[in-house]
Length: 91
Image (tube, one colour):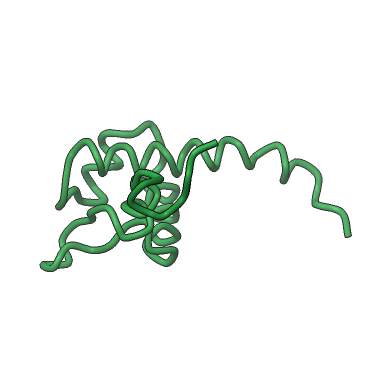
């Protein structure tokens, strides 16, 4: 089954956009709102909210306890662990 024309060409930009959202949340710290992300990033509101929804579904971001903002989720924290902490050896 082949991919629709242009789909594969858009994937790197989508990954870059997702990383931009993650980086903005990490830089701001817990509680950044969707509105603040839209103001901070050069992306449309729809794009930011679509990325936020996906990152929350995948547990890379979570809602803050007051549900007003976002913070890094467990999967980002797992990525940040050193090999010694996760039981893996480097090289």
